[in-house]
Every structure is written in structure tokens, then in C-alpha cells.
Amino acid sequence: MSRKRFKTLCIKLRFDDRLSRPARLRNNKLAAILKLWEMWAGRLGLLFNPGNDICVDEQLVPFRGRCKFRQYIPNKPAKHGIKIWVVCDVATSYAWTMQVYTGKQEGARPEVNQGRRVVLELTEELQGYGHTVTCDNFFTSYALVEELLKRKMALVGTIRRNKPELPPNLLQTRQRAILSSVFTFTKSHTAVSYVPKRGKNVLLLSTKHREPSVSEAEHQKPTIILDYNSCKGGVDNLDKVVGTQLWEKVLSVATDPLLQHPRCLCI
Image (tube, rainbow, N blue to C red; front, side, top):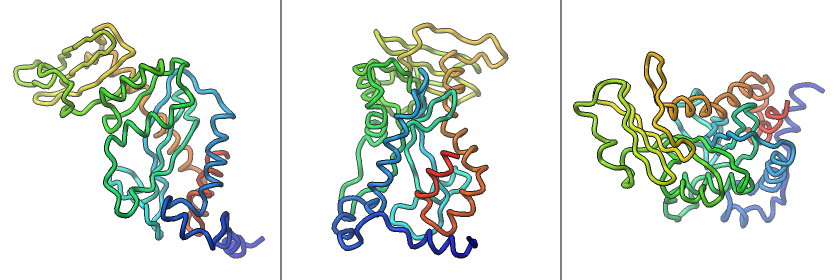
């Protein structure tokens, strides 16, 4: 089959009833391939049991065509594309489940606590097994930690300094020595403030760590940060693997990237 004919066939593919699509699009912008996507994403968790450490992050599928929920993320290599929330196994970078971000519906209010909602929805089937979730400060909040504890799950993540639950002594950087760490403990939470350079601190929250341990290496980083750094790259490693697939680069030009992305993940 020629490349031209293959592109033509891909463009003509349909996975729903076009007559009823306008009505369904009012409730879900992914209506054109929703059933197919849910069928595929639902099978990911049936084929693999993740290890104790999992990572929740966003993935940007490169795409510059017309799409109502195309995103612009300047800190991503592709910058333009379709955003997908992903839960990855840290050890293998296997995508255990995925959820397409389609933005807010027309006329709807912006979503509040989106990060918490994403983590809780994507990890719902893992509750009770003692997994540790690693995520960045977009997701981390005290409310999320409390919900995960109810599910017998731990969390390690960076946290934004504007969270009201953080005590003032963690936020202060004046007169703090470089490479110093300040810990705060509750019955089930550990928070740390680490100063990598003058006037700047890094804040993390954990329900996995209970000791104020600090590495004896050159930068004297807390163990919480070392564990976070070793687990946070699960989705980034997945991006690298997918980025090496020639199919992803060739087919996404002519077809729906959300149809070709699953293929590249499975190769």
C-alpha cells in the first residue's frame, strides 16, 4: 500500500455515528473517538500490575492541527499539542492509565482543585494496595494527601508555598544557611524546606517519610528530595520512548494524534 493511500484511509476513519455527534460534543469534546479511547485506556490496567511507586504527570502529544482542546505548554519540547494525564509505573515507565484533558465546556466555570481530582480519578483502582504516588506541585495539596491516606496510599510531592497548611517556619529563607533543611512533622505528614541557594527554598510534602534524614553527599539533600527525584521522571521517560517511534512522527501529521499515540505506546 502506498503512503498516499494509507494517509487517505486514515483520514477517512470514523469511530462513531456522525449524525449524533453534535449532540454528544456538547457534553464531551472527545465524542468522536470517546468509546475507542475508553476501551483502549481501560485495558492498560488489565495488562500490567504496577510496582509500589507510581508517578502522576501530564504528557503533551505533539499536534498543531485544528483541535478545540489543543494546549500550549511552553516548557514542553513540542509546546503545542494535546494534553493527557498519565499514571506511570516508575520502574518501567509503563502507562497504567491515561485521561485526555479536553478543557472546560463552553459556558462552564473553570475547574477548582483540578490536580486533586485528576490524581484521585486516575488512582481509584489502586486504592488499598499501599502504592506511593509521586507528583509535582500542580497536584500536591493537603486535601489530596488526606484522601490518599484514606485509600491506604502515600504521597511524595513538591508543594507550592501559597498552601495555607504550611507553617511559616518552612517559608522563611532569610538567615537560612545554604544547603540547610527544616522539617515539620504531624502524626502522618512530613514537610521539608530545603535551601539549594541563597533566598530560594524547595518545599516537599510526604506521607512516606517519617525521619529527618539528610544525605551526606555534596549537596546535603533530604532523603525526601532524593526519593522524589528518582521517581518523578516516569512520564518523562515514557515521552522519550514514544518520541523515538517513527510512526508517531509520520502518522500524526496525517491522522488524529490520539489514534496513533496508543499504537506507539504499544510498539
